[in-house]
Image (tube, rainbow, N blue to C red):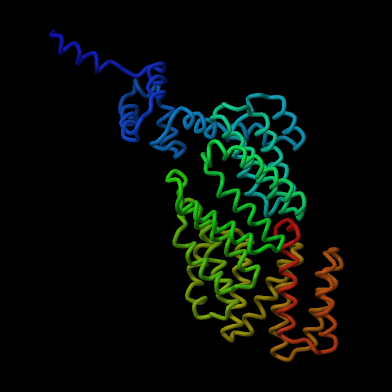
Length: 449
């Protein structure tokens, strides 16, 4: 065998060792070089023994073609986080905190991010649980030290991210002062890190969106809109690594909520249509349902009933695919309004009644009152004053039993007095509904709401 043959045979049996891979990864590498490395690991079983974890991270979407040692460590931390959460999930809130403070293996960057995501996910239905998860995320972030695994000062941005989620959890509980304090701490951490490393991890737009929700609840709508516009601009431009049209679309959904709060229904419709063009349904099917349902809802509120009817079958199909029982009930609420707008009065009345009973059974007081007011408007147009008086009395009794906020009760008292005096109008009914909607947005949601 000649020297060339021996060299070729040596190549056939030469595989990456863990040490060689570490030296290779320590070098500055292009995306094309990393692509070739992934190919080598994929086709060669021997090389896969040393670098298979890299290929797994890439194939799962946790690692891009542009990476270095820091990105690898972050990706591994994120991939390991679900198993760490499985250890914590069965425990009580106090037990989780004790374990995180005592067990160094839980000082995990990926776990902190996962806890933040979980806090946001459960917030609409589990306000207290959301706050606990965000507090746990802050504790995990505090347990990490500079340089592990990220570069110096990146940790400051993780702490900013965790504090922003704690602020969001406080907001969802109706504690706007506590939310403000948490966001102030978030901003201090973020600025301290941004001074030296910029927004290296892409947390900036996400923090802006969370803060915008707080400003909206504080009725500082212009500030809220400015924050979401800044977040959208960062998702659509800026650093190529942070560009994400899907998240821009999701942020526009937040903008639509803020515009809805200000009564700008037509602008809300326009923003929702823009959001639908940007989002990726495969990444978040429920987000698409949210957009289409809210678009249908706003079309009916704007009196654009023909457009709404054309969209209805599409929303129904989406709801059947990824929606919950409560989603289906809310869709039927919009269908009842659509039926009323198209003159199908009996169908609308029957559906409003059914939905009202379902919301009552779930103890969803504000929703019960809002759908009752829509039913009352239907009765007013038909001149059925005795039924309107009955509905007004029932709403007062329900709200008193639930011990809701006095502003909401005062609004219903106005409606009840007008119903008793037979001076109630559709316009007054809509005004009372708008007041209740504002009150609901400023109060923590009940379970199931």
